[in-house]
Amino acid sequence: MKKLRIGNIKLKNDLLLAPMAGYSDVGLRYLAKKYGAALTCTEMISAKALVYGNKKTLDLLATFEGERPCAVQLFGNQPEIFYQALKLPVLDKFDIIDINMGCPAPKIFNNGEGSYLLGNVQLAQEIIKACKKATNRPVTVKIRSGIDEKHIVAKEFAVAMQDAGADAVILHARTKEQGYAGKVDLQLAKEVKQTLKIPLIVSGDCTDPAAYQTMKKQTGADGVMIGRAAIGHPEIFAEILGLDQKVDKFADIKEHIKILSNYFSERYVVLNMRSHLAHYIKGRQVNTEIKLKLMNCQSIKEILNILKEIFD
Image 1 (cartoon, rainbow, N blue to C red):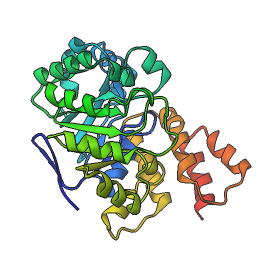
Image 2 (image 1 turned 30 degrees about the horizontal axis):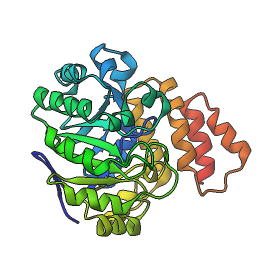
Image 3 (image 1 turned 90 degrees about the vertical axis):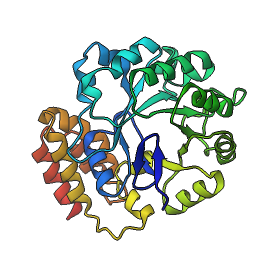
């Protein structure tokens, strides 16, 4: 397993947990690190909301003791706002700054953010330059292949980000229009890797050790970012690393809840865990009635009681 270096940050291996809205909370990140992920990243955070001190946004910055190195992912479309955000003390605990230029969500795209920036290279470069001016920490950029099949821009865009000062590029080799449908384009990822002098990290479709080996072999990428496959299954990092680590799913869920409870109210934890729980119990013979009861729990105690029945 090769180690990965991003700017002045040396990681213990080349596996990263992806920033995923609604999922990459401090609890999942804790478990990903426990099972061997070299780098974790917050879910996508609005640079503007940070600058204006939005409480819900600040909540997303929660980290646990021992998480470093860790990254924060920001989105927006105003270079001066990114500059101001990176000067905020609340971001001092993050070792790497990742800029989202690939989110396909219509709300983000229609606001001129995320994957919209794939169509405005000049503005995207200004954002990276503003970030590099604001901090001496590594700045990475997460992109997609392009907005649609007629506009595959990953190679040119990645080089432009490199020229603007980015320390690494993270490529999810699907278009904005594809969303999460179809397969990632590993040939395109290989071509992007061959055009860059900075590290390329590939994202998308890494679901098991075999997929990891295929992605590394076919693209030559320096690292692999794991997203959806880690939801409800954070031990995927240990599986890929070949670590002989015993997995106790119920214990992991309890740890996830405990970590969240260190930072948030019980109500917040209960609501936040619903999407995670649906994934944690996948593959178990759980009838619809029990699933509905689990999704409608109003307390942590209720959740744990139902889970005890499921896992016993």
